[in-house]
Image 1 (cartoon, rainbow, N blue to C red):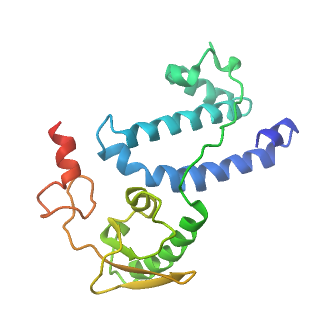
Image 2 (image 1 turned 90 degrees about the vertical axis):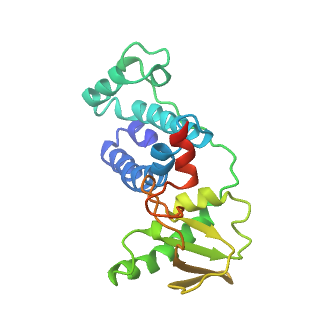
Length: 216
């Protein structure tokens, strides 16, 4: 997008930026991090890291939209915290800064395929009115491909209540990827009234994570 703007190709530049905002930022990242932003402890490392990532993204995007949506960018700047403003005194001082790549054990290619296959089954379950929300589900697999990644991160990415290698009863659906089997079933625990994940022993009780956060 920055290159296209530099070439005065504003139509394709804005199209690319809009695609990123709708499909990648809003459609994936913001959606899967809602739980930690709303339900984790205010100072938890997961919540803080997501706040930092969003600040970095916002700062980079501010430099992109400033020449095109000047009034909007100016309003954002006026209400932005100092971490976004940096040394700039007003919107005209803002310059575009690219986001540096970071190392991660997250296997994006594999997880995108898993999410795609999972969502195909979810669509059918919703049409048949078996479930209303993916948080009602558990996925079990003995696949080695996701072992290095944190279970909590996978659960957030797929918006499910549990990712495990356990035996499941009453399997609702199955898919395979490169010889690995993934089974889907309803969560066995109750829905937490605070985070809506099926981690509670009773529908009237908070799950252990939420109980700890609220007690602080």
